Image (tube, rainbow, N blue to C red; front, top):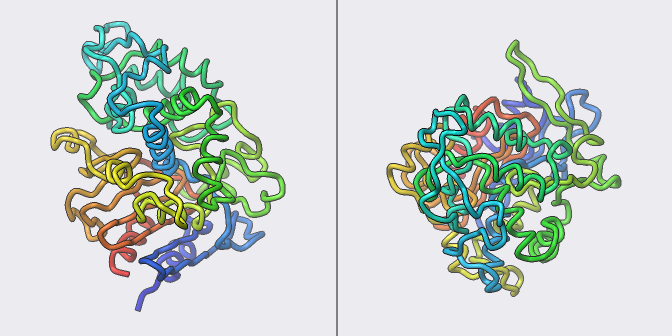
Amino acid sequence: MTNLRDILDQHVSNGPVPGAVGLVARGDRIEVEAVGSVDVDGSSPMARDSIFRIASITKPVTAAAVMMLVEDGLIALDDPVDRWLPELASPTVLRTPAGPVDDVVPAARAITVVDLLTFRAGYGFPSDFSLPVIQLLFSELRQGPPQPQHVTAPDEWMATLSRIPLLHQPGDVWLYNTCSDILGVLIARVSGRPLPEFLAERLFEPLGMVDTGFAVPAAKLDRFTSYYRPVPEGGIELVDTPDGGWSSLPAFPSGAGGLVSTVDDWHSFARMLLAEGAVDGRRLLSARSVRQMTTDHLTRSQREASGLFTEGQGWGFGGSVDVAAIDPWNVPGRYGWVGGTGTAAHITASTGAVAILLSQLAMAGPTPPALMRDFWRYAAQA
């Protein structure tokens, strides 16, 4: 009978994944396996507490932090964000998505907090990366694969963003990624604290997420994995070493994909969501906020237009929501997301299930690789 170790080992032993850690849990029954090594040299075996760049599974954490501010009464979901982000006070919108970046019209309405949470603010990636305005997201904002030491500080980043038009009118279309980075800046400005400090105090410390943050301290670098990406001619190449881009705090802490973490740390966050916001008798979020996070907010046409990114899934706050059993691993109501560095994390409230996969090989594109799909299939049956 196939087990979790078999699933992971199949992809590590046969290449190209150097190593991986997987966690599948239902209630108190937890299965964790670590296979392979932290780098291609095989210098250290992968371990349960190995630290990974988790990329876009940062997004649900950022969304949870925003909901804390909502519950604090400091912001509301329907609030226009220009009170805290004046750079977005007068956005312009491309007349046509494929048009030149200077052919714009005024936005029909203000961008709201919920627009950002649902990725419908007008900023972000469509399926077509060749559009002129999308090239500005890559070149001017360093959107795309995480580059923590190459992104400007939040105020400068927002000033640059203000000069880039929206691809669509606020509320109309789901677009990927950029909204979570904007939310990171919003959290800092509303709370009056840097994003790393706010997350540490309100989420990481209460949940015991001791290895989660925007950088890895020197004392923990021996547990930090190297990071690779596939190359067109076959094989993989090194992108970042433990003493590289995540060895010091970045100027721009990315709410879209900047965190490092472990399977047990993200599991602590997942358990909080499954418990509808409570942990060890302490409530971090209300049940209502958790339900809002994990409920699909897209229209059918918005889901269909999301293309390769969500493969027809819905979107809650900071993560996708399965709306139908499209594939063997899809369970209606499953919430979570994937990270471009080779990570994935999901919860299913109806079954109390958690499935977390961390690897250090970047995805080649929006379509999840075979390792993820095999892992999800196993988790759905476990």
